[in-house]
Image (cartoon, rainbow, N blue to C red; front, top):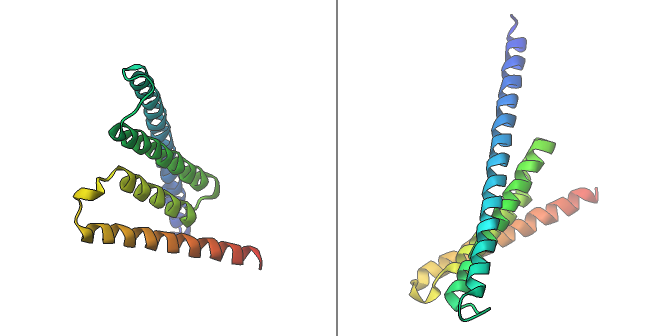
Length: 147
């Protein structure tokens, strides 16, 4: 067997393996998003009918928003995997948006009053870095589309 043919067969097997893993990840992520959505819906209903009726305290709101954002992250990950399957590449823009949502989720659920100021500065630096990165990626895409 020629070396080029061996290399081609190996690459073909590797691509098949990658697709199988990505399909497995999609199925598992769909299951996680579905179960999480059902769990959030059930939790919302039980909390809304419990006294005081239709009222949430601050702690419950943090849980709700954190749960919503976690499901949104799962949906964004599904979108990223779908793009990978269809186009055989990962879009950096989607990765940045997932990271921004994840950091936003963390910030929303943090008890800021209990954190040292250096931690808050670090979180702010991460948010700024992700926002600048996202902006630059978007700008690069628009410049590529105008060529």
